[in-house]
Length: 433
Image (cartoon, rainbow, N blue to C red; front, side):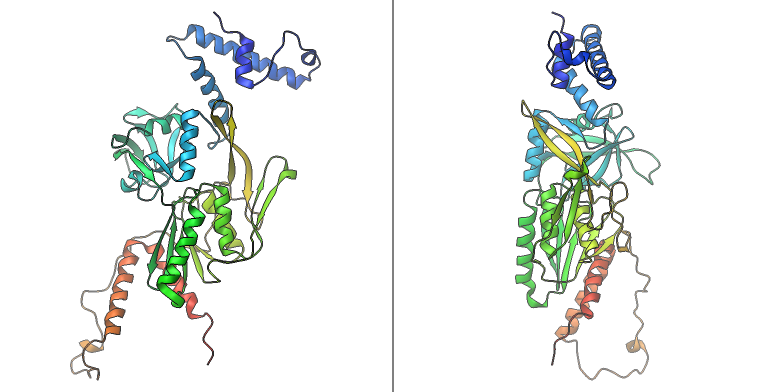
């Protein structure tokens, strides 16, 4: 039986159509145009359903139409079918299956925002800005972002081949990854001598509680000699807005954290800090790069505008929009861009990003020193130090120097951040005698 056009329109728009509607006769010209276009959609649906070379499923056609409508608005709005909606809910709880890669759609290809730390994507060397053109040999162009994400998901321990275009590489190349269950520990902490180092990889439901534990543990390990904190949000693709607000609030005593402004500016929402600083005023450096997006940019922008932390690294991604998950009947949902967010100073970072206070590109450091160190001790007949041997303190200092030199080679940006904290601490309050 031929599908009723009005039934199709009701499915597509959620409207109810009667046999006769006085309101249609009285509608404005703009409303008339809307209904004309909806009738056009019904005509197209019927033509595809009856004349396409292969049999097509009504549900797939309607869902594709809905998704096409949303993805035409911006790269972050999309339709979540039942499977996608469930996976999104799992993701925000901090565990999901896949490759561990945050992506968007640009110029018809999948663009990597950032690989998530300690996942197959990160271990395979994927980088922010990489473009994925093929998945297992199938071209991405012409597919939606949801289609591409669905292709990248699969059974744990199965392989997938991604074809990558990377800036600086002359030709596309293939990368083989093995799918895994991705368990995101969103906060990782490590003591760097007398400085606390905290890496936030994503903003999920566990982030703020993880941050609280990390700061408490490091204070216990370092004690009163702690000089400051480095918060590393490089390659952090974002996540939950409320967690970004909580993390910012953790270090601010007062003032605005972020504002979100929808189309109707009367509904602007402002989020303010409450009294209390988990770091108790310790110097802070926040590391960002072009893989730092969304929620991580909220935190960096708030701490920068309130001059609570030195922002260091490279310009962030520039995703200054808020997506709201709107559940729909049938356990599906819309991910819809509903507002832009602004830093406390009123700046939108959409497409612009957060510009660090101190620009520090990630670099490969190469020592220019010769193998033989020149010093007073190398001169013939030089006086000897009256203290014989090398003290434990000297050995410890030499070890720290070697570690610092190696860190500068392995992670130049982090090395600079630690140096910044130590430099600030030199001019901090001095004990009164």
